[in-house]
Length: 209
Image (cartoon, rainbow, N blue to C red):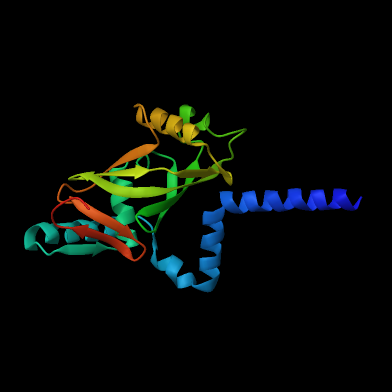
């Protein structure tokens, strides 16, 4: 019996370690939010017309006055991403927030399943709820002037990570093109290089960074 108890404890420990690895991002964010909640608030933004206007004004300054770089806030970056992505331009995608990381972003959105196309609903396991939370994260970087690429390393639906093959298939159905799990995002053409940081996105004048 003692050996059986040790075996059960070992299995539980392995399961806990596996869960910790699968949800390491969520665990890290939770700890960070408890220790320094303002850091999470500063790096998280939501799109809005006012923030989009500010972002476009800063980009105009970059082209007109030619400083070495400008810094966009999380709200401003979220607005550029929302306006330049066919994923977030769909009806039924609401409450979008963007959290900045080191060269990566984490996007959270609520999906109104009654308003999205049927081909999207078929991607959700089981019977979709009226609203579903979707979280996606991965590196965001420039590819050419006015174009960025977001590599979706991780997508979570109903609290469960989706396999990479499923993510690629979903993106392919949404965009109507073959996908390897990367999403193209249009930026103003003046943006040729940038780097995502927790404190903001630095937009550079000149070569792609």
